[in-house]
Structure formats: C-alpha cells, structure tokens
Image (cartoon, helix red, strand yellow):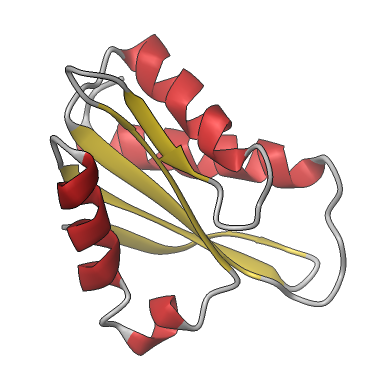
Length: 118
C-alpha cells in the first residue's frame, strides 16, 4: 500500500492519496478496511476510490458525490487496470464547491507521478 499524505490543502481541508494492486470488489473492500486501520484515515470525512478491473469499473464516492468517477476517468486515461486509487479528504469547515474535483484530480495526478506511470 502506497500512501502519500498532505498532498493538497485548501481552506482547511486536507487531502491524501493512496493505492495499490487490486483486482476485485472484495479486494477493494479489504484495501479500504486496511487503510482505515490507521485511525487518521478512519476518521476522514471521505475515502473516495476508483478501480478498473478486467470485469468492470468500480468506484465509491463515500459521500463526495462524483469523485469516484473523476478517479475512474483518470485511471482510464492512464490505462491503469487492477490498481485502486483512494483520495482521502478531511473536511476543514469551508465548502470547496467545484474546487474539490480539481483537488481529487490533483491528488490522483500526484499519485500517478509518484507511481511513475506518467
């Protein structure tokens, strides 16, 4: 599991991004469960994720409507299959509006750059 913390901060909200090999919905559930063993991630406002499996794209917005689709689109563009990416947000008290999607994209880009796929 690769975790990059404090990748973006805006108006009090903080973002982290993590990911790793994953091939199914069951593995995705196990990945999120493992991530949330870290109390910091368990207390996060949102742990949104996307995964392209051989069978179908999978995503979970975890209350951040539309964020999972943003992650899926970026995975599709990269052609990255069987690898889950989770964008975690800790809400800072001020609504970010549409900027939250820009931050999800930015976090995924930071992860992909760190992974060396771009």
